[in-house]
Image (cartoon, rainbow, N blue to C red; front, side, top):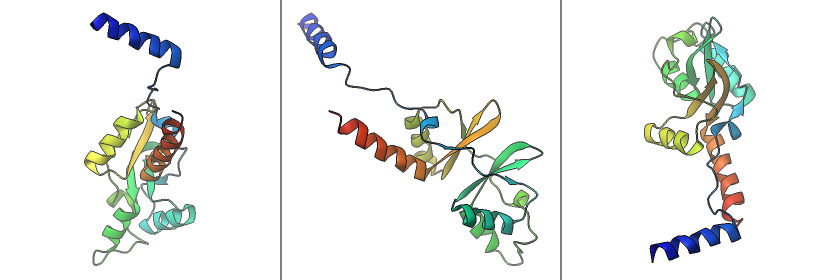
Length: 155
């Protein structure tokens, strides 16, 4: 009975091709070469960049090394404190140092699961200790739309 099932499954795959496709890597949907900001820059500078480029996350660099990320939400929280001058306070005092980082080859399913579990707004994509991209919720929704359109309608 089991041999019969395996035989039918084998012929089904041969005739129709495999029904499952590989899960794409995050590099397929990430934003490549994202804008960055120096840790010594002011909060006001980060705010201007985010508005100009219509983005919500900026990877932070210090001495040429990626050290974390700052979000528009981080800016709003810090700027909301009494006696904070966004033209004086630097990114160094406000950014997230333990940002989630992944390889460009990381499966998008694992990255999205981790983002969901920890409520991360973005993921820094790093290859050989160099920032190569950023993957945000907007990128995740773009991936979701693409996968729905290409994978679910293909059958």
